[in-house]
Length: 140
Image 1 (cartoon, rainbow, N blue to C red):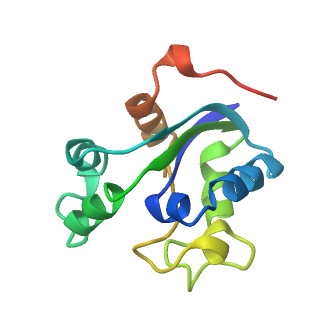
Image 2 (image 1 turned 30 degrees about the horizontal axis):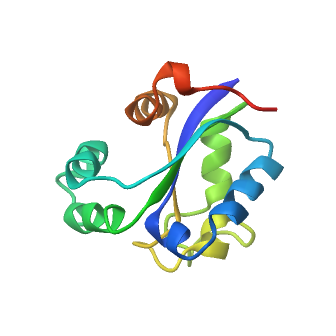
C-alpha cells in the first residue's frame, strides 16, 4: 500500500467540485488517509512549490494556490502515486484523456484543478508537509 498527496486547487473548491472529485478518487480505489480544508499562505505555497522556483510560472503558481481555500488529502492504494497521475490526466487539460479529472474539471494549464505527487519520495515529503503521522488514518 502506497500513500500519495493530492491537492484540490482553488479552482476546484471555488467551482464546487470538491465532492465530485473526492467521490471519483474513492470510486477509483483510493482510501482517504487524511483530508483537510485549508488556505495556503504565500510562505507555505513558496515552500511547497520550491522545486519550481526557477521556472517562469512559479510566481503565478504561488498566487493561484493562495487565492482561495484548497483541500489536501493523503490517499492510499497500491501504486497510489502512478495511478493518481493517470486519474488526474495531463497537466494541460487540452491534452488530458477523456474522463480524467483535468479533462472534466480543469479550465486551462494554469487552473488545472488538482495536484498529485510525482514520485514516492515527493509523496512522502508532501504528505509530511500537510499531515502529522498521527493524523493519517486509513478509511476503507
